[in-house]
Length: 568
Image (cartoon, rainbow, N blue to C red; front, top):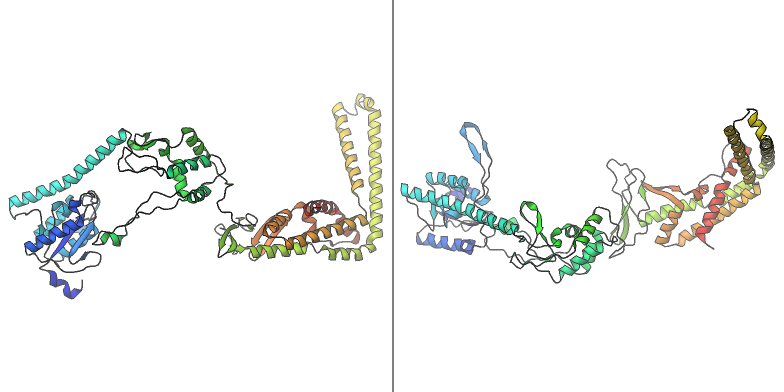
């Protein structure tokens, strides 16, 4: 209302019609009925109705509110100078009181007392407005300004509150009695029909068989709840049709807004609720929230099947059934270098992406990558690993000058090992011949003799293994070249492989692939670690050669693994 029009309606009335939520089926008190009766009463009594529209409150002077008049806020605040503040639960009724208190309207017309209020707090506010000269009119009752009229008003106020309390007691008592008998007083679970009779909730011929299969499939231990939801939707299972909640605008509308019920698709949350619901055992919630035998519906599944499902719900289910298989070749392959969180696949605009939900404080800013990033970065790594032919050419050029020193060193080492092996063999032979003498003389106790003999045998075995493993320089060069050729072949196969094959080849080579900023950080598996080692190490020439020979065993292991992966 504009400021300059506030005084126009000081001799006019507003109309207040309230549809209570606690008597929703009483058509006598519908908004349309109240509005028609009040307007006829106003015309008959020559009471002008303010033709004013106030957004969120009224249209043509008629206020329509859907709210219970029985509830009241139990809390209040105490201010200074004896002021006590109470809260009015009904928003439109509160606005009506505010306008009447400001004197912007002469009064308000109600159908009857219980449409105005059903609680003592709101009754007290109406009484104060009336004593201040606000004209409160009621279609179905007339209250004189006498003691008898006051008594009449008080009695109607008492009975309006008593009506709601009585209805509440009757409903609560009836509900409690039905629950004691095992009657389901609420809507049945999906798979049952709500006929309007609480004592009869038969099976839904369409939904019940599918719901039963949900229990049976989950009991197989091969289905996750998410994939069960996808399967159920594919079978055509939906939730029973249900109306959505009205918006505030729809609640405030003068017309009755009709909302059509909608059957919504099954979700993961629905599956979780279904699998945990004892309703399917033929039970219903009784008093004190205890499950009791139902007389309204029959069991859909057996107790044995339900118990098995509950046991399995306590463990994590990994599904092997997928309604729609998604092609994410690099799933689970890449992790964040800083917080080790895996990059989880998702699809956007036809492109496969992998995103990491990093821990708080993770300094890695590369939170999302795609297939191309993985292919290019991993391909560059393998390309670097397979270029060992250049290194071998350098070895061919540099090693001959050190060959004589290497052979001299190897010969000296071999002679030393052989001398030590002969010495140990002589000691073992002496101990074998003089076993009794050594023990009787006290040189060894029997336990010490056995320990010393085992120690010498171990030493001899280690020396013999060292002598056997010593390779010549040609052996090393030959193995290195073969290893390099196999690595190059593996790289060429990687280049022509599809995404799935590439992912498997990467798993064969790398034990770790991690993302940091715009690059991949890797760690190769044991058989491929020789590809990472530099073939030229610092130090004296002889030292360099001996260090190269230390990777000889790794090279032979790599050759064996690459030959296995490449096949015949």
